[in-house]
Length: 411
Image (tube, rainbow, N blue to C red; front, side):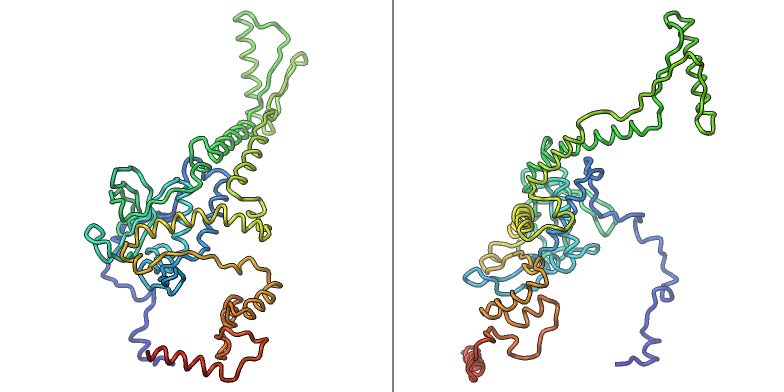
């Protein structure tokens, strides 16, 4: 429906023209040249190859859907609960992050710190008074101090634009420990040893490429007396001045003097140790180079998801379930579950065979298959039925099913 011109003039808004001239834009709060709530790597992680490993794991964990659901009496999925907690996990976790960006933030902070907290910032009721509250917004926090029943956390306050330290009770803060802590975060773990070796390699490279000549000048006389030492020192300064003052770095020496250059690369086994530790770390994490460059097959990816991704996402979901769902909610068969789309790793040429098997065995309907491959659902009522199209169906089967549903609704 086209909007009338007069209505457009009355209700339209423009970001540049409709600013309030009486409002001061200097009271908006603190401003930064970079995003202040973004997780920052520490302890050398930001300067090594482990950053790419952390980012890959965080992206894969964030790609898994987490939902607040209701189960039936047999523990099977029944429906999605439209709650604030589900909105945080799927759509908007806070003012700055979507649900997926929030989970990625959680995983990257978890791998970097070893143990982090998920804080429900805004809730419908006071968590100190009742446990029957709904989470409206949540953020990732760094744990600074541990107390018997409380923790001191550093969390970003979107009202002030700064990170603040607050003390919160453990019973409503989700405290998540990295299940791969022994491999990644222990002081003498494989990851920490690799980071130290990479730091040593960086120091060696900087010394090698520092621009120094490292020359030894052999003079044609014996330097044993103080006069000879002063004469040698004067000769050294003279060569330094020649090199520094020359446009192309050229100096001259006497024919009887010999110069030996030492700035060759150092012979050590650092690179071999780094390659060994990298291979050991990848094997302990269940990661291969093919996973990082995207050439892994289904078996490798399945091993990676089972050994690396599943423990991390399970730790997050289990702690949320324990802290954000009360015993009453769990008795009402509420749950927080995660599931991974099994069709993401399926090649296109196998989709037809899988679709045929799933529909023929009445596992998925035609419209559910169409949704998987990105097509709009069909308006044909038969597309929403779990029937085998390869077998002729009785003409009155649809009428019987409709009659049964009406009888069940009537009862």
